[in-house]
Image (cartoon, rainbow, N blue to C red; front, side, top):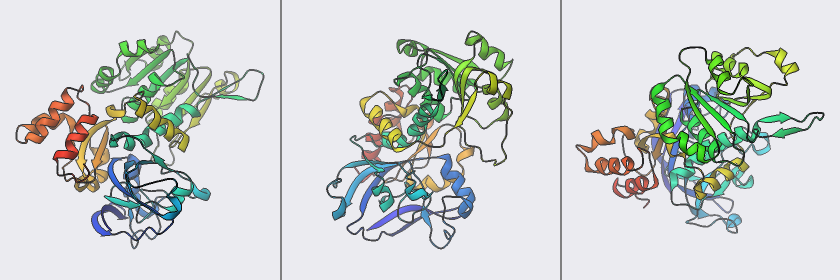
Length: 421
């Protein structure tokens, strides 16, 4: 079977190509990929090529398929796995399998498996580590966003607090506590707001900051103060572009400091703000992944010693986080649609990946069985003046508070030349 896929050959060298997939044999599973959301991690791999820890040294001769946030349907199953999978089943994938300690992962390391492809063969490591996950939904972009949402969920689970008189840590954020998310109205921050408002360990106070008023207003229109209050959470949005952010943040929590703080930008002053607003036994989570290997920020070690301040960093979620993500989305408890700002076809995936930091907005969602230039959802109305398909999409998303939605996905796949139904 042939597949059409974006492969990496080296630094800044991504190519959309058609090539043959080998037979799966009795140990394999083949999938059709419907959607893939582009991650900044793919951009980093594209920039670094073989220097990236997950990209093979010989990638110039044996290119690999990029993309690791993908969802679709199973099309062929080898004899060994017929007890578990069958053609037609939906799937999502946990790419971080850590098979025998290996850093290999779909989207970086495999010549026949990655998200920016029409078809792929699932590596044996993914199957043996139970990382090809059942996905019982016909909303494919939810499955693509299950991986980034699992990173958010893992962050919440990784937070911890001490137990007085004991060396046992209590895992997770403080239920009913005070929480701050700094620089948190990008796509991952929006996902974190959604999870904080709807998980089983909600804070009583959630303060969300950024320095971009337009992005703060968008977040506030999606996750409203009124909705948060109905969930038992006092939600506040704060622009920290001017004034004294530490003073303002401290005032909002009554001067006692925050139990949990998550930093969503690898910016030294933001990290130091997070440290400065921690309360007793406060936990600071550095979520943002810096590209600078020498990135540093100051931390008050007096408070580490006497106020039990501590720090944790998370990079990705585990399979349990992924399953929780899928379950919450399928039940309606989570809706990651706010993360998406652009839609495109497989033909634009390479250029989009290479230009990712320069394209404003949130997640860029690729539908692999169509050709479509990367288009901001906010531009649907303008494009709709000349193209009735975009006009129809604009009507659908406008009725959904300007957000991508299952109805829009179904319309796109039906009317933009899709072969996947």
